[in-house]
Image 1 (cartoon, rainbow over the protein chains, first blue to last red):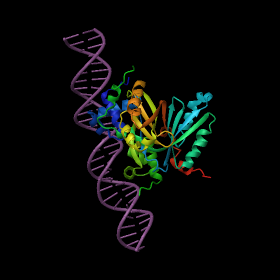
Image 2: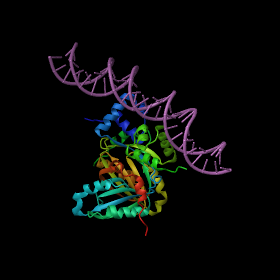
Image 3: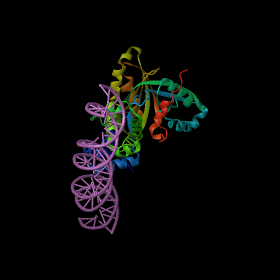
Image 4: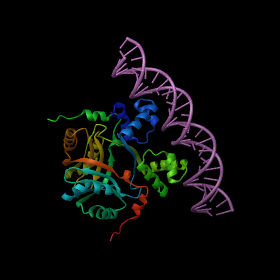
Length: 168
Length: 168
DNA sequence: CGCACAGACCAAATTATATTCGGACTTCGT
DNA sequence: ACGAAGTCCGAATATAATTTGGTCTGTGCG
């Protein structure tokens, strides 16, 4: 099956940092021929290791200057419907991300809105109103930093895995 | 200045959904010539409306199957150093995203780890150990849905902005 | 051992895309 | 109405993506 070697990892890594990196340039960076590189990228997509590619816009420029994280708790008896609820929420236009969580909160919903008013309205009518919801807590996002954009060439992800701490 | 019209919005929107969409195809979708489309995309990047492009990997395939959101609170007197702390954290290899928050928590840190052991170790040594930190709370992520992937053609972002609720 | 096979790779040819460039069109101010 | 500025398009060119065929390597088995 799709066992990922060192080169595949470098490919994924480079594409995380620069999603529109041309195949030719990518091939050069990881040290293989463009044709081979293309084959690998397609295999990575087919295997699911490379899920998707997305632009990261400045939401404010798009008229959505207010971002927030909404922590949602479902009623205990509604936990079974957690997937149904999430499936509905993820299709709402303002929703950027949904994280299913363990712990006190059932999930976090990352949203972008045109104003604090719209945010309040959105949370009230789209999130809280659902009968499965026990409570919501809205936290404004002041800034958002993206990890892969701040990572050096040197720090490979291979190193991360190697550094597994002991489970004493 | 970079005032964004209807077509620019559609461009950004399409690229959010498909980051590697070829310029020719993009031009076709938004109904302009490829040369014009290229010019607009570059203008959007220059103006900052299009920040960046990233691949979305399956972190488990990359050997990092454990994802978590860590809520961090700084000591009251350390709030001034919030940016310093964040700048350090964002460069750590396991960190995917950092959200600066208003509210009780100062920020949320989205991380990917090779094991629960590494997660515990990472939070303990890289996040909690800092003298500015008052407390951390770690929540495992069971699943992560991406909004733009689940949005239909029909639902334009223009509609979001229009639907500004009244501030009565 | 030596052959047949599968898998991975590369280079060159082909196809398609990205990019540049010049000119046409619109808008706006005088 | 005229000219300047801005925006757009189409065709030409540069560059990249993709296909193809063949080489190399390792493997299993006669």
